[in-house]
Image (cartoon, rainbow, N blue to C red):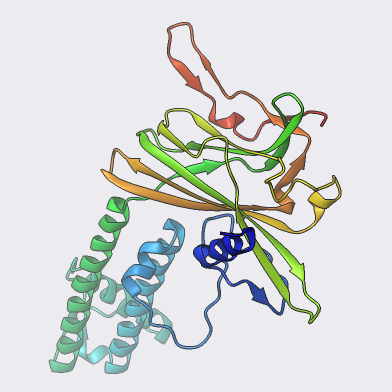
Length: 312
């Protein structure tokens, strides 16, 4: 297979668009999500969407939904009128609505202190609906809360920067490192890294060229410490002819890490990318672990980003 054919096959394997009218910032965001915005109709699974939210966004959605439902029923109770509720002592519309809102929350959560009681058919019908929706909502929120905790996810912490460092005797290498951000262990960890470079074509469009990068090692059996990923800049590297100024031009390094998580008993994965804004020229990572006097290895997570200047 020719080099051109290999390049075409690799471009197809990565699954990203190669040509576009506008310059791409990055194909994978630094949080691991794909840099994609879907236009037009697309089927949305609310369950999967809520599972993928951050915890802050999940609690915000839960709180706002609960608030919206209770405001809705408080409005209905307000329209029904105070003559169909016992215990309403407000003398103005605003405080009357607040009484209905408190009653709705109590009914929704099945607390029911008994201070306000619905009278008549319509008041009781809507109070029953409020209670039923509350039961369903609490059940759904509980299921989602449990599912989010039990969902297997990798929690890798990557260095803030990708660096160009001296390597071996007369060479240099592109490096970044990461560490397991959880206390339980991962085994059989492997990594794939690819570069993306854009070229402006004669017709004004931009063409992305992807190339998988050979690494010093792409798999380790155990992952108790940090792991520094090393790509040597040799004749086979797409960065071989880069000058110091070329590193300021747009490029991207995309990363996929997979490993077996012993706590979940499943394989987990995490994506990451760096671009030219994350790059540091002429640095070298400092060692971030040492063996203590009692024989135990100490790993200093806070030193993950520490890189000293080194001439190239």
